[in-house]
Amino acid sequence: MNDGIFEIIETGELTERTFEKMTNEVGAIIKANGVKKALWDIRALKGRMENTNFYHHSRNSTSGIYDIQFAIVDIPEKAHYETVAKNAGLSWKWFADIDAARTWFKSE
Image (cartoon, rainbow, N blue to C red; front, side, top):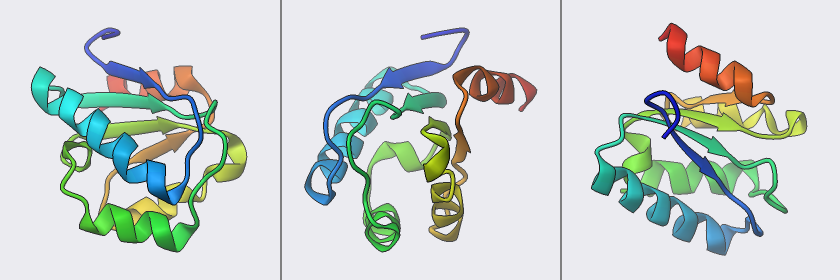
């Protein structure tokens, strides 16, 4: 926890197979701790999902990460995922800078 925000730093490899496992694990932690705001730093992850796969998993998942205020910190080249998330009905916000994400939470 950092100033009321649950911060997660994810490492490893992100693939279609690992995405669901990652979101379920993070969702379980969020539910168990009653988290309302979370920052997920995925800059260190290797690989990313295709937009359509991300959209599909996001629309069909029951993970608790879809029910809270969420900021994703990612490499700048992946900022387009924010649009994919919005199209999937999520209110996630993408940032390339972790301090900008923290500031966003404080302004909400």
